[in-house]
Length: 322
Image (cartoon, one colour):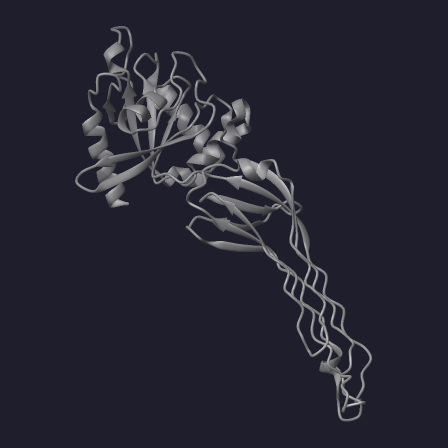
């Protein structure tokens, strides 16, 4: 199951208390202080893992608590540090403070870490407080409490190419035709309800990642049709493909609608390179009118394969320029 949003609570461990002890040996009846420091509390750490592709594991575990540090002991022994809690998340994960909505971390590199809640420091033992005028200190520090914070975890898929279009424009069919991805395909709208990724190989040793985004409808940028959940997944793409069904009665109007929804969601998308693709040309009818489409476009059929090599070549060229 693809899950791209979760809300969790994280708490780090408390530092261990310092010890108040004194040396008591057979021939040292008045030994000095020897209380050790407390151990550091465990931290809560997010780790980016390229082997994960969903937030499913996090979605169903709402709370994470790291261990407390152990108290110090005699002979100036430091207490054991609390064990850290490491939360593994997919590449492309945004971590926000739930109270302020501030982005605390954006994990996009394998192994990248973010310490969400540092563990509390351990308290100093009484051995630390011995001075020339105070030979037998009878106090030590308490451990510093850990932190407790609430976060929202959001996944934005990492892809080179994003497929954008109305429902049933042929996005899933194209992804299945050019990669080994197998999204659900059917001849009715909203077949795709979650993003799908596929690796497209071209040339000798080159490849790119293509993302099939669920179909957009008018008002998607305002949240209609779960638009906010879908549109966020194209924000990281380098190139956009605007897929328009050859049967559209007014393709120019459809193109304008798609552009407007993207710009309303994120104005930065206006700077993104894109290609207009006329899909399903094997089913085109005489009454469809593409003469009003002033922008350049490529024609393809994902079923017969017509135009696919030219499209892949064009995508590769634009990505290399990027």
